[in-house]
Amino acid sequence: MKVSIGIFAHNEEHTVGRAIEAMLAQEPEQAKILEIFVLSCASTDSTVAAAEAYARHDARLTVVNRPKREGKLAAINDFLARATGDVLVIAGADLVVAPGLVERLVEPMRRDPRCGMTGPRIATHGTAGLTGRMHDLLWRMHHEIASMQPKLGEVVALRREFVPEGLPTGIHCDEVVMEAEVIRQGGLLAYVSEAEVRNFPPSDVREFYGQRRRIACQHRAADRRLSYRPATLRKRNVVRAALNVVREDPGRVLTLASLCGVELAARMQGAIDERRGRTYQVWSPVLREVRVNATQPN
Image (cartoon, rainbow, N blue to C red; front, side, top):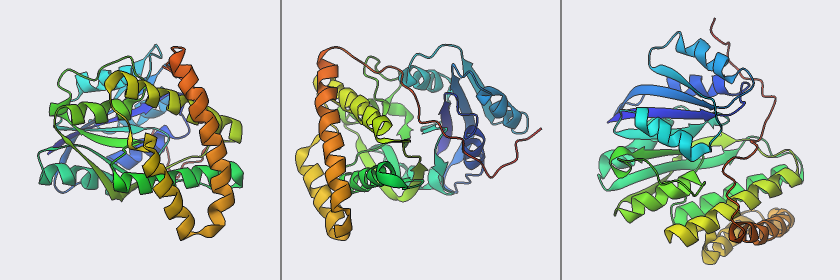
């Protein structure tokens, strides 16, 4: 299978180099990586310069500097128009990507032509403080839910044939829109728990609440406008996941109580936002002064 990779960034000069190196180092045996695009959306720091330094040393890498910040879906459609692969891997520039990720994401598609989209397990990079613990528990519950019913995010692989004309716009929750498109066309989703990426927790509860409110609003929009309800909106899934993570470690019960409070408030406010027409087309990313274990090319 032929693979195109898109890395999406906004003011991520401290992490984009690590993301590029991780993708350049992918060596799938059952697929060929044709090209890697880094799409920088209105970055005002040195994200573009950092990416271009790598592009000078590898012909597969192309840097796209998008001057306007029009939302991630617009950037993804830009990538889809440029990419030539059969499988499209879509990733953020702020993630820690493990070796073998692409191989594992492509494998279900290679085995079953009906598989249109895959995603890895998401873990957290740091669990300090209450916010870190809630963030970690959230993604542990996400794993439990995705194991029951695929819920894909952070990094996904998408079979080209399911998006020949790009993704529909107007709902700014890219992974959910992709899931809905694949399901609408009779395709299958696959959660690949053996593949893993790590993300960074928000700096405090306020930032965490803001993220959850935005996502709740976008999920409600998908439910109403696409008639597609993500697995994490199904109450039965959430209850079963909560019971599983507490059964695994009873010491998490206080963190779970805090998480439930934040999530309930965020979902209520997100529903209000959606009814008022708020879209969260663009938002502030989680920014970190991350020291990468890489030396930027000259």
